[in-house]
Length: 55
Image (cartoon, rainbow, N blue to C red; front, side, top):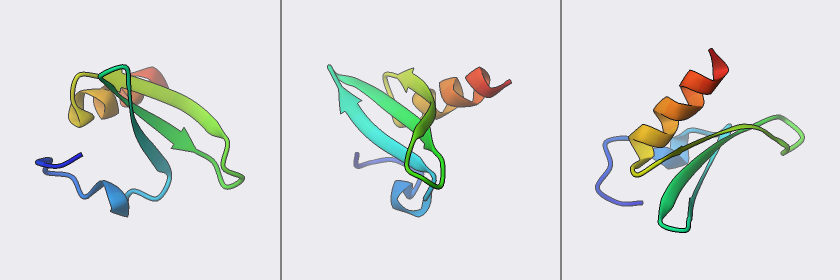
């Protein structure tokens, strides 16, 4: 995940993946379980989708 404006390694409670050419961002709890996911064609879109799913 290069060429992004977000330092993804500093976001400790989010897990970033690329699955089938789509970015996936998962919110992780203290025990390491995935709480909710967001999907998109970019990291930013996936984060926005995750945020929208929380609302």
